[in-house]
Image (cartoon, rainbow, N blue to C red; front, side, top):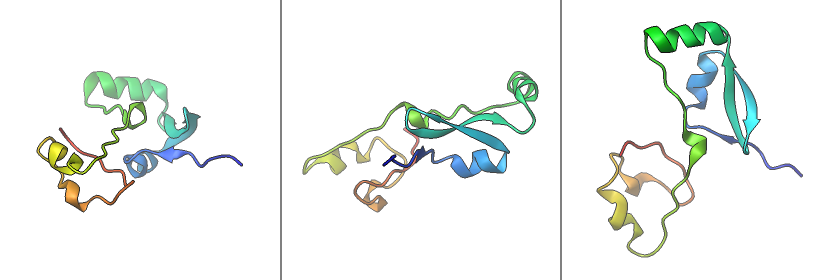
Length: 91
């Protein structure tokens, strides 16, 4: 049985911008957007773009003091994240 593909926390944003997805390392990642690669390139050069790096790494912290050890590092309140839940944070 095939494992379901992981999804980026930005998945809904990719969808709303017309992304077409492809499997990449177990993740369902945007490959191209409805405007096409030339328009995507122009936007990157003349406006602003975001590259989703969600698939590049994860952080797993364990131990009795794990929460206290990393709480001050992140902008989100990690007390609100359930075990094994993912969350997007700025650090």
